[in-house]
Length: 381
Image (tube, rainbow, N blue to C red):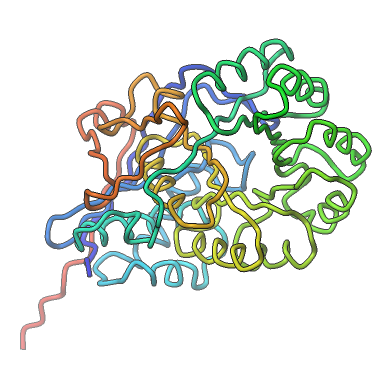
């Protein structure tokens, strides 16, 4: 079991190939918080905090996560011998929220432990899949015609699911245009990122016409009762994202009938232990799950791919290849998919299954902070 002697925080900046727009804002450059954990034997593992610069997805930001890790979370790990499956509990005690900060450390511990055991991260999580299907997430476009153009290109590239970001005023016409262009056999879905209220129910019901795979998070994160009402009115399955922050919320969703699918983002729920618990609860209830994306670098992608190898991740995830977002990633080999839209799960190499390009990270770093375990006090009798 590794003892953590050092934790390094780094902020890097990665320019997106093109701006990515959702209902709550647009990203042109990704500020990314990377965490490197090192043990007493010299082994290390990299992880990624997926918080955005602004609190438009969750209350967390990259800056609040940095503070939370430095002041409250890292001190609980430094100098300790801890099994990875206990880290979630240790970080949760008397510290509310900060799930993305917690997840970066917790998931890094899983990777470091996998390295020390000589097994792949997917195997360490008890993943069963050798390949996982991937979909693509298309940001909001200025016109339906431009969205159709992007969707057709995605189908030609082999993606198994086309996700369309929507917002009030850019929804029914846009989804309808894509459905008409792609035909009835291509799986499409829409993601509102909580841009609507229950007062929009009559409007949202019109989306049923397009026989989508799902409608993701149309209402606010706390609107479980209203989501249940909307689900009763719609034939399209609702998928919850922001609403499911832990296994208790997943149980509430199931009990209330607030949705029929869950998007599990490990950063949003606090890491792998919570993700696996949500996965298991949903599997028992017959609720399929899939792994969403947060514009991660190749490091964050490695964790998502490992998680998506669990058996109930039965729907295509947002696991697009590195080249979808970045001119050059920070891992080697970069993430790719085959002609059938499948991402291969690294199962033959210990840990993440990709090599972190430390030199490139150094060149992209805009700030860094090193945290170390306290030295033992020398007592002279």
